[in-house]
Length: 77
Image (cartoon, rainbow, N blue to C red; front, side, top):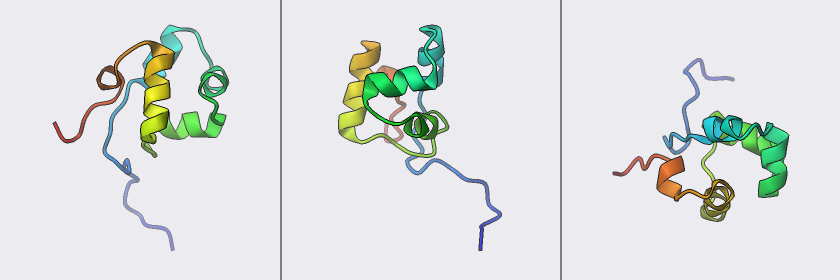
């Protein structure tokens, strides 16, 4: 049975992936290739359905040449 409640982020972690990706003119598939993940993984991250692993968060930060904190909001701060 499906819940009627709205789906929320597993971690509550907001991110700027979509805006950073589109600023560079990259598709979701382009970003997925650069990160070594599936396009579906990029979709899940951009829609905030899933939080990245620490390893993936570091790869994302390196790909965009920004600190993790400039990409992901810390829900504990």
